[in-house]
Amino acid sequence: MFEIPFLRPNLVKKERFIANFEKIEESRIYSNYGPLNKRFEEQVINQMFDGTGSAVTVHNATIGLILAISQSKRPQGKYAVMPSFTFAATPLAAEWCGLIPYFLDIEPENWQMNREQLEQTVKLLGDEIAVIVPYATFGTAIDLSVYNKLLEQGIPVVIDAAASFGTMTSEEEDAHFGKGFGGAVVYSFHATKSFGIGEGGLVYSMDQDLIKRIRQAGNFGFSSSRESVIQGLNSKISEYTAAIALATLDQFKAVRENRRTIYENYLQELCRAGLLEQGWSIQKLQGSVVHQFISILSPGSHSNQEVVELLASNSIEVRTYFSPACHQQKQFQSYPHSTLDVTEYIAKHIVSLPLWEELNETNVQRIVKVLGSLGREKTR
Image 1 (cartoon, rainbow, N blue to C red):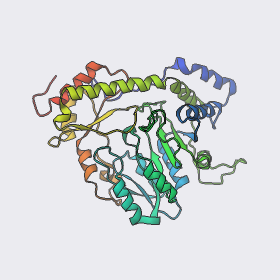
Image 2: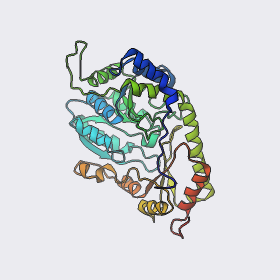
Image 3: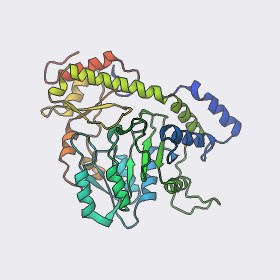
Image 4: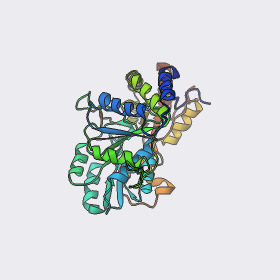
């Protein structure tokens, strides 16, 4: 056991959702887009997206990606263009939709998919592109103008925004990331996410017909007569999950503020220790992010494995998202890709540091102090 673990999920306490559980017992409706699920979807649209667009819940974000890709992709296409620097769920979702992942590099500062490579790839592959799947890296907002233009050209876009629920854009702080986007935006509600409910997710879009198709496909492809008329699966969340989601939404503002404070503590300590002048670097974020963790790059002369071992020797647990990158993993090694120099460098140096809600200033100071000892005598 680590004295400072990487994650300590802190889901909403039962006192906040027990009243909704009682409503489930009264209604005896337990699933199938029930009244609590409907209420949650409506509240998300009203509270987070200012009443703009439509949304449907899904059992998890991976299922959300599968459904969004399957209901968006061009039938003549065969490639799903995406960054290699993403979670394995993204290329796996493309595989489940019968597509070939095509990996691109990321930009060195913001870690979003390389927009110059994307433009070149669109010209190169043309109609062979079935869908483009950018990743909003670690919850950041990304430049949607590029993807709006692709939508206008008839190229479908599904954004993997797994950690971006609650992220506000840089243009106006009251605009949720993804608001008004005509493609699909997929968010995760896994227990480890900042908006954690155990398992769950959400697909948002301005395209109401797309959301209707995803909802239908997530219910076995049933028509109103319960005849399966399109390829489907079962992606529905239970009313119990919806009850937890509603309670989580009620307290999400406090969670956002707490996590922002911890992130700012990290930045202060990193600056105080002078690490950002000593070869360490962090992601350049866009917008206001509800951080799941904080990722930092080790100096060029030190690999992330050295950092992981150093921190572990001081009873601090960290991870290395995403190392190896997707194109380096056995399942995806055979797929086509662009040059991936930035991805491979970051995969060799990235360290994801703990950021959970009870993490205090003393914990943060201890973590940064150990980081500062890299290459010197180990600090206890």
